Image 1: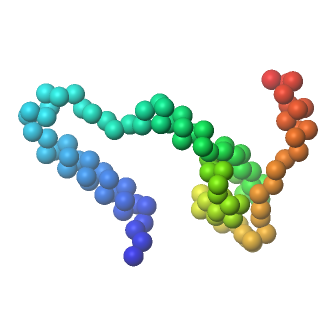
Image 2 (image 1 turned 60 degrees about the horizontal axis):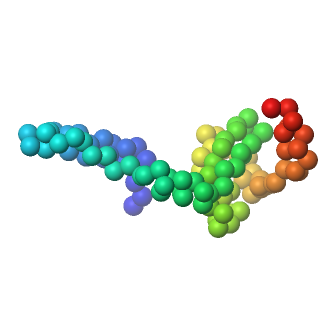
Image 3 (image 1 turned 90 degrees about the vertical axis):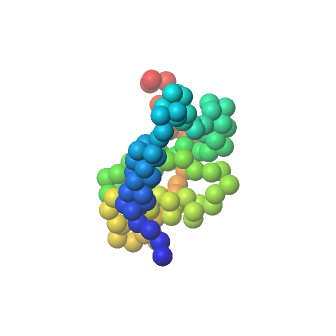
Length: 111
């Protein structure tokens, strides 16, 4: 049975509070260690993705999202649809389109 996002957030908060309350005095002498990705790993993960600006005029929404270059258009579209705050009337009637390269050339000199 799939879990709702709210329940996983609550579980994470509970596990965090449990770990904080169960710390011993000896562990408090050590500085807290956070398992964060190193900048090299972060750079590699960002390099392996594409940043795409998604505009949905019917809902007046604009989003910037990262996608794997290996992902299909269908997978990218499903990820976009899952992030929308409102539902679309006909989700099958939407697609992803690449803008003309001339648009980017026109804006390049204006910045």
